[in-house]
Figure (cartoon, rainbow over the protein chains, first blue to last red):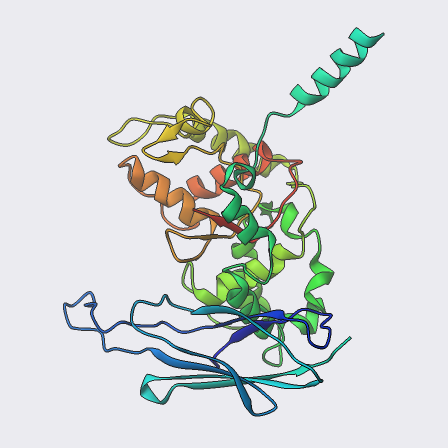
Length: 107
Length: 240
């Protein structure tokens, strides 16, 4: 099954005014500290880094660690002066990588 | 005249004392359920939409867009060569019309499709169908609902009718309405069906847990749907 992510941005965005972006990605965020039913250690599998770029310029980034829940949900505010393209990237253990893009249209 | 008006208002206020579990949750949880962009089931709904159109014999090839099924979820459990709840119907569609093997109970794709179909009926009143078999199941369900079971010797009715609104440990006892299933339960950290909820309760009173899709669980589901009939549904729900 392909990785899923859900990103919400407001329908109307005005130039220069901050708006809230909400992003979540389907990921188990296995801490590496838990044991399975057979007693063996479950291997660590985390999303390590989230980045949001507006036309290539980094506007928001987060480092994620073991205490962050499965399906990590991030909400943050950004501001744009002109229309462009928002790109989102989640990077993690075992080569995990998920990318999404959203067109940013200004009202 | 004024007294009469007051009486009418009072009667209207007393006409329905049923309260959805949604209305007795904390404001934070109510917000979580009401706001689609915060809803913890949004990833499941995304999976449901993905599965809806997947494969040559997809859900979409017969049903079209999911919103064509508006109102369908309000009319379950139904009787069609046996009692069927909504996940049961989806399983049957999968086996008979898509020629695929049934999912395990509570499988992630099954819950995702159930949530997607149920979501289409938001705001509609629960309208469980009638019929000889369903009436019989409803009566059996009502009997089960009132029967004391388990090592704790408790019936559903003792908590959810007689003690609804009081507290069990730190948690509020809800009236046990079924208007928001499937629900994302924070304790489960996942979506779950009504059967999972009922099995959890059975386990809680230390009773033998009925099998998935057993006659007892389905009968109880029929009764519960009738008990909540007419209440507006808002699935998928969020519950503590």
